[in-house]
Amino acid sequence: MRILLVEDDPQLGRATQLGLDQAGYAVDWTQNAESAQTSIKMHQYDCVLLDLGLPKEDGLSLLKELRTSGFNEVILIISARDQIPDRIKGLDAGADDFIIKPFDLDELTARIRSARRRLVGRTRELLKHRDIELDIAARQVKMNDELITITNREFNILQMLLEHIGQIMTRDQLEEALYSWGDEIESNTIQVHVHHLRKKLGKDLIRTVHAIGYVIDK
Image 1 (cartoon, rainbow, N blue to C red):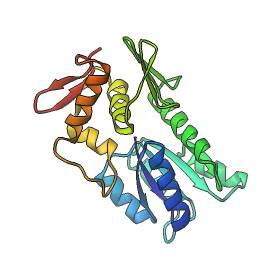
Image 2 (image 1 turned 180 degrees about the horizontal axis):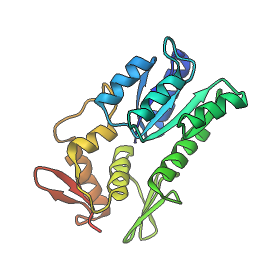
Image 3 (image 1 turned 120 degrees about the horizontal axis):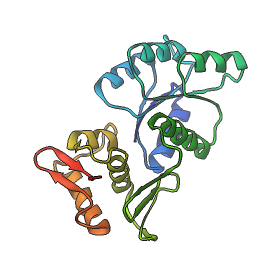
Image 4 (image 1 turned 135 degrees about the vertical axis):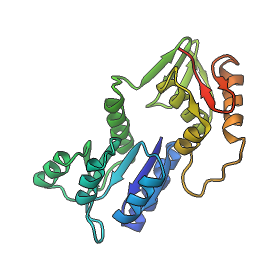
């Protein structure tokens, strides 16, 4: 999952970015509304974490603009404003949740998962396909009830393919979801991750669609 963090506090922004990165997310961090708008036009994000107290244009205005422009992915407000009217304004403007600073990173990731789950219409943090079970909350994969060790990026590729089962995911789509600004991406990076997944979970799990991408068939 790729996340855009919009937070003008350097210390909190960096700490949140690092924490989410360690939790397995690809995180881009920007410090104002203008940069956030530019980033959203250039990249595909699954979630935006939005501070309200931004310089120049505030977070609430940005939230309204994003929803008006058709951005339908998850938006979570992260704010030190803890008054009920502020929460109501944010939720009424289109936020999926409102999180008060300071927040616990584990709670933040749980709220991100919960909001994404509602968006895709899933009731549990569990994806199953044949003899494979993927636990999104625990970031664990089991095959025939045996725990399989995989890397964060292998997990993210598997999750994306299972969430779009039967649909071809292009290499560009997978790279866009897995990597944030500044990450080194070699031309065969996705191919290597898929190769490792096949070795661990079976060569027939992921099918290559020549010159396009990959798919897990129904």
